[in-house]
Amino acid sequence: MENKKRIFKQIKSKYFPLIKSLQTGLLLITGLAGYMSARCPIMNMSTLLALTGSLLLSVSGSTALNMWIDRDIDAKMPRTSNRPLSTGETKPQEALIFGLLLSIIGIGWSLALDPLYGIVVFAGLFFDVVVYTIWLKRRTAWSIVWGGISGGMPVLAGRVLGIGYIDWIGIALAMAVLFWIPTHILTFSMRYHEDYQAANIPTFPSVYNNQTTRLIIAVSSVLTALVMGLAAIGVGMTWGFLRLIAVLSIGLLVLAVRSLTLPSERITFGLFKYASLYMLSSMLLLFAGGF
Amino acid sequence: MKKITVLDRILLLATGLLAAYQVAVGMDGMEPLSIWFYTISFGTLLIAGLLLIILGFEGLESQAVVIVSTLIPLSLSLGLVSEHLVEYTLHYLVFCVVGFTAIVITRFSVISRIATIVLAMVHGIAGLIIFLLPIFLSIRGTMPAGFALVGLGGALIGLGGLLLAFLKAGKPILSQKTILTLLPSLLFLMTAAFVSGLSFR
Image (cartoon, rainbow over all chains, first blue to last red; front, top):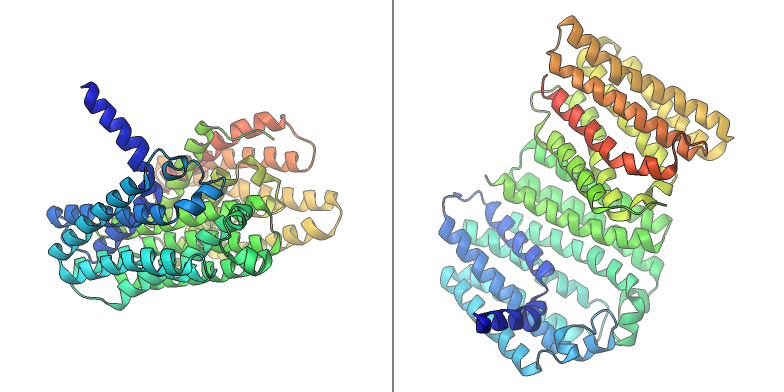
């Protein structure tokens, strides 16, 4: 019993923080929403569970690998300096094995479930780990575009698993996530501007300026709302759900414009939080629309 | 400024969920025009609730609060008029557009006394419609008795509007702390009354 407790405690403190549970949870929800957007028979619980398991493992694996790759810059930033790899609680080798193990099982499971679904899940991992983190993150502020593409893969993967092929609705859903990413990441990089500078990571606020960054956030918010609305119409959401998505989109636009015209740190971080809530709500509506 | 508590956030979240429910599924079978008006009012309530959760009560310091808090009673009363006093819809719509424009203009361009009078007049008329019309329709038997709950919501929105308006005008009826303590409960009860009242249509 004591041994079990110790192992559980170790997993909780050494490995659980490596998967960024909130971010992974949100991506998992987008995947489930993509699947449900296909209006699959909800009785097909085995596929739904397999999607949950394979996506959870793949996303967690890629996140852990990112943590392993970024361990040097995490140690330089006050915001991330208490992560287990920075503090030394988790050894780099342990994190690498953990990340690889989760990724291999997750991708393998995905491919076994459906080859096209597996390829899309793998593309998400590849864009995230190789293109975004290894290749571009330390070189250009525009790396977030590739981070955004990888962020859009779970919802596309879910949709592909539901319908068996890639359609315009799946691409629109992935694009909605792609356009949402700048709102999410740029507000964050404005708030933690000094942290990123300390780690020598190029961000929009450091390469351009805050006002340009706010303009990009506003434009990407408009695009997110438009593409999400388009995808929701394509999915065949009820008029009531469409109204609700429209209302939530207006909230996003109002905050983005407010951040542009009357900038303040509170509004910027408010936009960051609202954008997360917006994506979560939209995906839950897509999910609920499947019932 | 009073810090927002966990209970406040729970009440505001419940308010937002009720408003979201009303927007998504609570208006089935209504006329399109009424749906638009109710969507504006409940949509504004939803976004206002979410922003209060995110920004805390400091969000109330914005000038936009007065405008947002005007949008809710105006659009709700418009929804009621377009549903039950169809022949007056256009007249009342004109009043709402003119009233809303006047509130926006006076807020930014003239002395505060005129702004307060305009605000009180427009709010007052909208508030009376929300309070009296559902009760009148219920008593007359045109609508089920439960519809009068919308009137109760109207009374609560009137109370909340008064408290906030006087607070923003610098002459608070109750202390700022008391008002902010009451506000989440008031918003929740008001929304619950509206949603349950409208379900008796």
